[in-house]
Length: 224
Image 1 (tube, one colour):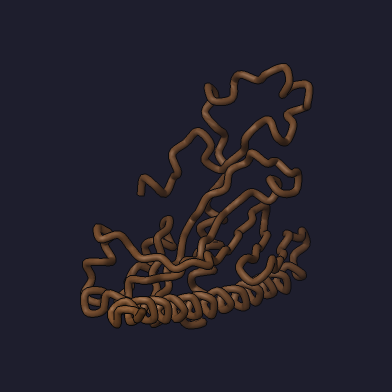
Image 2: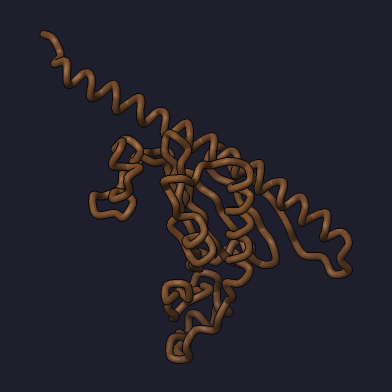
């Protein structure tokens, strides 16, 4: 029995393409890691000159995740280990860059999440975080970002945008800027006016009440 030639070609070509995409994404994620570590280090140095200190921390959580804490917030960067393709209806599929070579539509993904630092400190398991952006990277290290405000508007030219240290620094700084401006708002009164006896007895136990920056509200950037 012999394999069909076109089947062998399909499997090997697709497999090699996905390996290339994975490697490009992993190299990009490692660049995010080193760049973010350096940015936090600079914040820490500047913090030494301040009378009232602010907490700045970088924590490496393995090959595919790291986090930073600053001023009551946490940013978590996570790389997905799989490779994805966009749906036919996605805007990026209409670009000349993709039409010229459809293989360019295969991307790895890096997610950026924002949580409250207190959610982890006090183990409030029901608290909510928000994905403020996700970075798509193809085998040529072209990238674009789907995200909120600064992230989504500044980094969306897949045709010409190529990952390098300067662009990664800009993305991380934009994520920190957005997070800093993304304030915790009080939820609408009707959302929180009822409290059960169990919740009160547990003194608003960490697992009973949910806290999130836009709990009960529309995500502010969704309207912009």
